Length: 157
Image 1 (cartoon, rainbow, N blue to C red):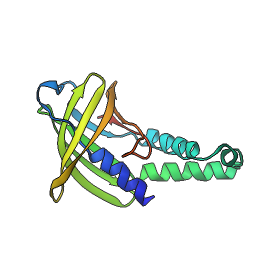
Image 2: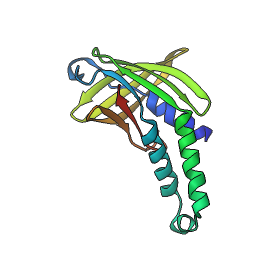
Image 3: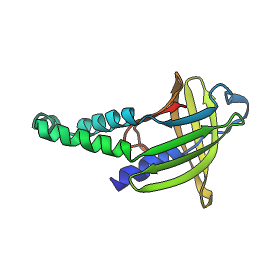
Image 4: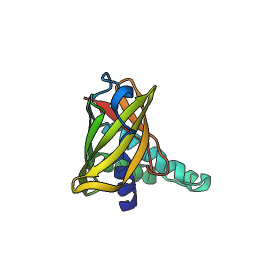
């Protein structure tokens, strides 16, 4: 779970490729974690990681336990992403007992947001991290991948 926390936050905290002319003022704003969607995505990801036999062997009690775990994870999580019109961002997070603040730059390219994290709460990162997210209908969606163990969505506040 700790690895999941670190990977999720590292991803979330990663920010955009630049800023400037490709940044979209209409995307700028405050985005917060959609806890209900996080619980659904967390549960779906857990089930997808199981092989068919393991999934088929889950009892109703096992499924309820997974749902309780997913909801508890979501309830203890908090993420706020501020995308500024100048192409900079700040993200504050709390997840699985870990919390922090990161900042960097972002750029929009069509339906994609490119985020590049350059600073943590303690200063400049030696190696900036980058991640791409989808933007649509007032939501920023981070997909599972190398940096992100399961998807999560931030909704415009």
